[in-house]
Each structure stands twice: as C-alpha cells, then as structure tokens.
Length: 232
Image 1: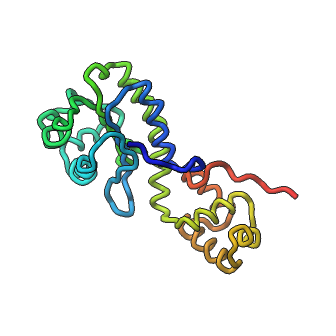
Image 2 (image 1 turned 180 degrees about the vertical axis):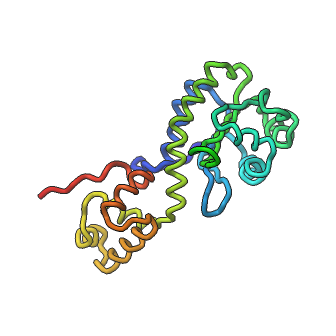
Image 3 (image 1 turned 45 degrees about the vertical axis):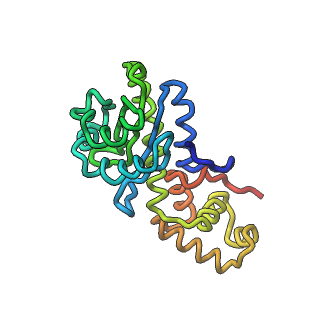
C-alpha cells in the first residue's frame, strides 16, 4: 500500500513513492520496496513499500540486505539488475522459501542504489510475473535507476541532517530570503527563538552562513526549489 502524503509534500520520500506509479504502467509489478541506508542508525530502512507484508519488510531490512551473501552479490555489482534466475541460489534462499513464495511471489528483480564505488545509498526490489522479466523491462528498470539514485541520496541526506520539523520550516523561509525578524513574525515566535533555530540549522548543515545553508538545503532535497532572491 502506498503511503498517504499531503498534497504539498515534495519530500524525497514522497517523490520516491510517486515515482512507482508511472513505473508500474511501464513494468507491471506485484510488489515493490525502496530502502535507504540510514547513516545514523547504520542500517537500511524501508521508505516505500507496495504489496509486501510487514514481516517480509522487517526481514529484508534486518536479515537480507546487510549480512546476506546473496545481497552482497547485488551490492558488488551496482550496475546490474538481478532477477531470481540470475542471482545464484536465490530460489532456494531463506527469503524466497519462507517469505516470497508462500506469499505468492514467483519472480522478481533487485538492484543496489549507489552513489559511487563502495557507497550504498539504498536498494530497490520488485516482485514480477515471469512474463514481465524481459530484456526491454529490465532495461526500463535500469533507466528507472537514474531517477531513484538521486532521490534516495536526497532522502538519506535528509535523515543525516536530523533537522526537526520546526527547523525545516525555518530553513524553508531562510531559502525564501527572509531575515530573522520576518521569520519570527511568520511563525509567531520570538526573534531569539529563530536565532537559536538558525544557529542549529547552520551547524547541522555544516554551513557558515545563510546563503551556504540555502544552497546545501537545495542539493540535499530539504527544500523544493532554488532559493529566490527577494526584491523590494
């Protein structure tokens, strides 16, 4: 089942979830999961789940992704898209025998989402009918990877910065060009409170000033668009 996001939400998680809709038209799937590696907790977390039971999701993030020799093959070949018949021994693996097959899944594909050699950002898993595993559809998944990688990177960096919801509100207004007095008036709080938020935002983003914080916020996907200069 898809997550329910507010219409105004443009977070990387929302964009990842939205991306699966047009992908399903091109490559019909019966289950889909996108994980992101949380650099703070040092483990994968499921960001998007379509059609998988909670116990399967838990097994994937806890027992399959990091320690499994099967997934290590996927991780060692980030440019490839593996399916059940090209991933050695997968049909007889624990995840297939105890979770996927009993749930009615008979075929699927997996890929690692990486930001360069040795830098795993997350992973992408699909369950498919046998008839869907064609060279054309596998090529389409390869193209999908070009969208998934930057969105996954943005979501991971959002986790890494650990900005609170209020700090994200303040950051958005900084990016809109507001000064502390204007932000305080907009959010109905004191200027001292905003100054504290700004100090924490700069520290968490590793920025030395508001302009640098704005640029980094856009690059990390913390705000929806480039900051616009204020006039008047």
